[in-house]
Image 1 (cartoon, rainbow, N blue to C red):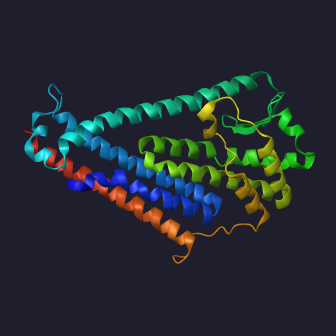
Image 2: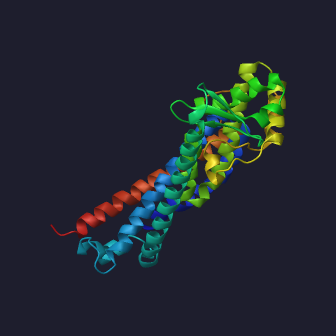
Image 3: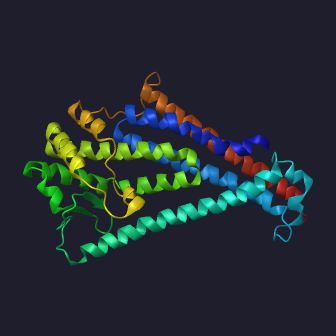
Length: 310
């Protein structure tokens, strides 16, 4: 096993080039799905790595419930610097569990509070809230609804309302809240994955922008609505939980992209292009991380099996 057990903890360093290349050169829909998949796989590999190190670290603690053979010398030799790595991983796993729990709690607490606000309003997929604070976001649920304040509607022209509603409906249809939450949890598992979240926020917003432009049939109108809504909007009470439903992303880049041509939606991009490099780096980093985690898990299992008396 050796140093390979540590690879899944450092391979997420590839997240930064993946994020930069994917958000700039891939179609936003493909970029969002690629970024989420990479984040989830790399986070899962990091968890496996931490779990293996925790086994080694816990086996050396007095009074632990694990078999005595798991603390034998051959088990400790399977992990370099086993004493320090094992005890540090126990603390890291506690921090990861706490961070993920807090993130999920905030997400569903904000969602429940928003649905309680809608309880007395008429049905339909759009809920207009009488509020002097301008905002709009897509609230998932059964069914999901678009929440928009009267202040934001007043800042837009009637023709721009259709682009705004189409944008928020695209968030619901694409289940963007799930992608954002999964990537946020991945960042809690391994902080090296945080660059993927920023890129994903941009990609999901661009995805919704393109859907709004398709529905309205007017890219300039959609760009104007996006720019005006972003300038007028104010943060919604709810803190970090709101980012799991929607965020504005880099507005100037979004507007510039809408004023340009429709991005090509190809399959696997050509290798000798920036998009191809992004896809290759993502695939290579994820594959190496998964293989390293699998190799470490199998190797440690065999060592533990040999060290455990019948």
